Amino acid sequence: METTFQKWIFASKIMSWPKLLVAYILGISIGIHKNQEYSLLMVGLGFLFTIFLLLYIVFLNDYADREIDALKRKLFPKESLKTIPDAILPAQHLLRAGLVFFVLGIIVNVIIGIIISSWISFVIGLCCFVFFFIYSFPPIRLNYRGGGEILEGFGVGLVLPFYNYYILTLDFTDTLYLPVVVFYILLSLSSALASGLSDEASDRQGGKITFVTVFGNSYARMGIFILVGFAILVLAFLPFFYNLFQNWVIGLVLLFLLYNLNRMNRVSPRAITNAFIEQKLFKKYLHNAIWGSILILSVHLIFL
Image (tube, rainbow, N blue to C red; front, side, top):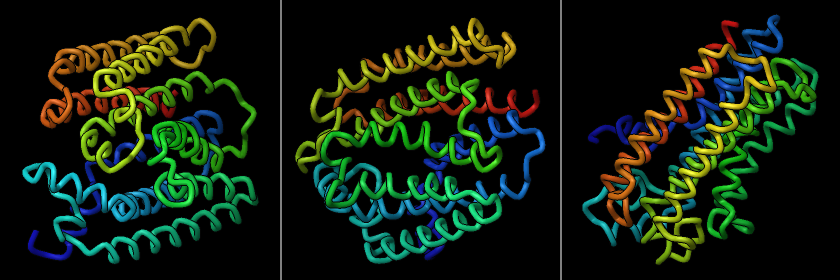
């Protein structure tokens, strides 16, 4: 990383972007399915809002976790680089960048609210930013006190998709899409649990309370399988109560989920504490399952 641009690309963690972009796509696809006379301007502004929110989270999360990250570098000096501890970028630069994207996100949020004449959209959009603030920063700092996974699961699985759905439809009463949202919340919670696997040792030593530091690696992996299993059950029973997707699409998504679940199961016994390579594979298969299944459902909703 010789140039400043390369350093900022590294700090932006592009490989993690699908976590929020898939949430955006789900919300937009439900909005398009609900209201076929949708606004392309709102689709574009919703995307811009999501990108600004994403960069706000990425940069300020590194700033908020700089002490824990430094501790992890001391414990595991051969593991992946960290933006601040490895002096790739100064902490103050990340703080300023995060605040800039916060301001940009709020501006877009206000513009959206003005265009659609809705204060509700502004409140929901603001909640997206507030959720992260109480996740990482004092006085609440929920990610350090045992509630981070729940906040992340509902923020990614519910609040952000709902925001992008709402700005297209101005509706929050239709329960037709509720099972899909429950399906995604369960998957988002499983992803939130998985995020703590590779940080178990440093989080525990740094006094951070997460599901993994409290219950241990094996119970965290078990919890992930349970959440994905419940998500599969929700999807499998969806055709009996809601005529939302064609049966072949449900079958395709179930096969895709089971395929990746099998891959997770194979690597899981080796994804123990500090087995970073195996943990990375485990999380890769989990995210393949989540992002792939949501993309299939979203594309089907758009083209129905």
